[in-house]
Image 1: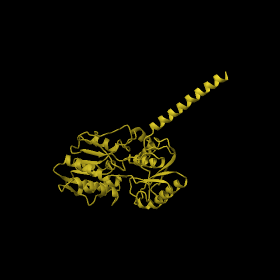
Image 2: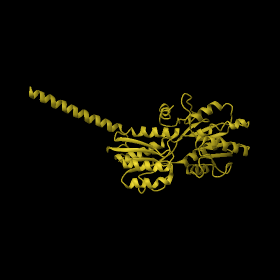
Image 3: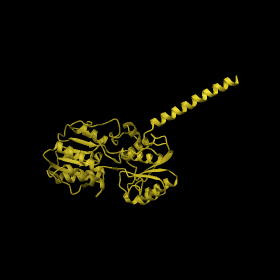
Image 4: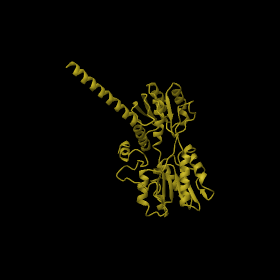
Amino acid sequence: MKHASLSKYLALSVVAAITALATTGVAKADAPSWCGPKKATLGLLDGYGGNSWRQVTTASGKQTVDLCPSITKYEYADGQGDTLKSISDIKSMAAKGLDALVVFGDAGPAVLPAITSVFKSGKVVVPYRVAVGGKDGQNYSKFVGASFENDGESWGNWIKSVLPKGGNLLFLSGPAGNSQGLDELKGLKKVLGPDYVFVNQEPFAVTNWDPALTQKVLTAEIAKNQKIDAIISDFGPSLVGALPLFAKQGKSIPALATSDGNSLGCFWQDNKDSNPDFKLFTVATGNDNVRLAVEWAVALATGGTPPSEQVFKAPAFEDSVSGKPNAVQCRKDLPGAIYLSSELSADDQAKAVGK
């Protein structure tokens, strides 16, 4: 009986071992290539997390982290628009012992000394989207930027398709001198010749990406320019409150090349019939830039395979003319402040923005 029991025990042990190995194999097979075998902890830091775009982006980053079982701890910090708090958050997360930091450095070069110090202490640090200065391998592990010039080229090519003979263009961007707007303008000018005239003051009309200021700026531009054939804006949702100004002037809303947002898509669907010139083209607003940054940080911290891409390029999302890659999207049952181009599901975005 003892020998029979031992044989049975050994058999069960072998089965258990095989099952464990098989389970491990499945787990490894299910994990993405950028998720390595080494255990690590990670923090995601925002310079300012208090709007819907950041909330969706933060949820997208967390969803990406969750794909890697090697990440055993995750933390988030919101700098709340305060540069000193953002710097403190970076230092604090490193002091807690977190292995990797993904940083949206809203304050730009002001946070570089803190990032550099943490990197030189042996941590993986991946700033993304907003340039903070410095160099890969010297001040941080990897900078994962966004090709705003690519956005400008995409807008420019679409404008050429709907206005083949040229036209008057109004370009709106954020704060004065912001690098995103300047790069977008480079892309636009790569593909648009002298037949396309920018009616705004160089390099762009300043809106600070603020809806109230956008409305004020657009009012002034409509009054100043008898003819605007197309508007270009790098944050489409901020235009929604301002576009009805054209109707007040007895004019059709012109063609619009911008970034997507649920509020904008629904506005187009509600107003397209009464505005015959209102064609719409959008690129993805870019929430998924964070996914590429997280993948890089996780790969470097866990010994995974780094992504092949180093820069996020926003794909075209909507085109009211061709319907490709998508017709204009609208989810009236969900908040306007979500971005249907995001990989995060629309329902999960609604939860992220608290509605």
